Length: 500
Image 1: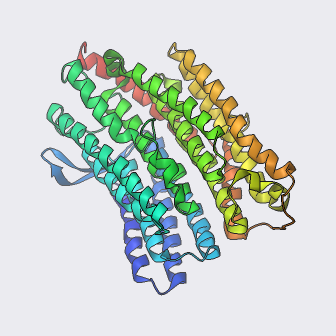
Image 2: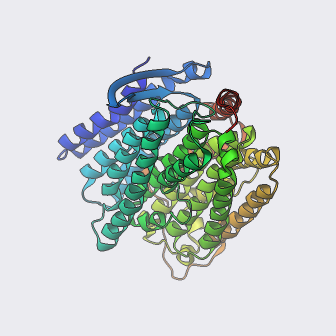
Image 3: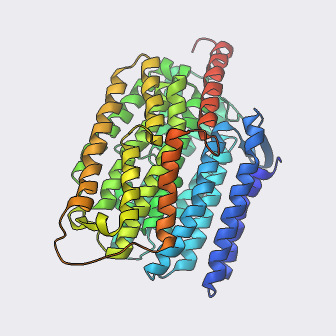
């Protein structure tokens, strides 16, 4: 199975070529998308038994830098991200076909091809075994997403695309500087639970390298003040917004943050540098400030965008807290947020396709006319607010317990305050939709099955994983096993690296 990670990367890349060749045959073009999504998912799922049993699946290919090869490796943490992306691509593909056809969008061939390349890059990020491999696919994802952001070709879309590239490519160059420095300090090092830089250089030097790397991944993770590209990118079609917020781009940033903290530096080294506190404070401020900012947004997609900025920093804060429960909660929140937030964006897209309305006051009464869409929205909102019996409660409970484990109860207060703010900015939407009085006598009905079925499915999964967090693909077990391996590796790194 050593080449399965490579096959998971290549299948959608090959599909992108086939999609481009099928430009004049829409049904064939869409069939390639579905076939590639299904094959990718089966490839990733086939690796699950080996990884759950404590094994890894890896292979190295061409040498990219002296001592550093293209190294693909399926481990516990990488498989979490890969399973989430592969599973949600199937649902997003169904939704995209319905959305693009209902909206009569142009440039659909380029849209589906770019989507496929994005998923190829996402798999590469998930299965990267070292920093140079991670960087290669990380930048590939940036470039592949740009055509999706500017899809409408309007002046606003082009401006948003420029902003997106300025933030992500600029930050990527700082990440590259950090990687070059790490290559000098630890030539050929692969990702290692607990990190591998302990004792490799003075703390001041390692601290500077960490800052460069953190900015590099922090732009995609939308840590304030590196976040403003994300609300601007809401001009893209809604399935692209779902990709940005739930599956690929921002999750690549938070995934990279966890890799950097726990597989390159290690929590003990961060504590010795004082970087854990700085990172935790930055994440906490982002959680609260973005939540307050969401309260002031009257456009549905922009409110969801600021919600994403806040929710992503739950993951970053969990990484900084550095206890087993916090790290497990952070890893599981990648999954929890993925299902909940894609539900909300799918709902926003369904609302727009049917009504061309996205201003929150204009949604009055639509909940009674589109009960499936707004019912799913309500479930997603409940989950993101951390309501018991929803998947968001599981991840946030672990993050809160992790704050107590690490002796930093103040951050538990941040999680509680954020949950209250979540209710404050989500439930006026729900109330308006179900109990508001429409401003004009217009009657709408539910969207077609290609749109409502995916959003209903992700909403139901959010509920199932809240009750049985190990149901199906055992995301919860993977998260805890990965967190335990990280903390065990941190102890070994401290013993082997000496006093930092």
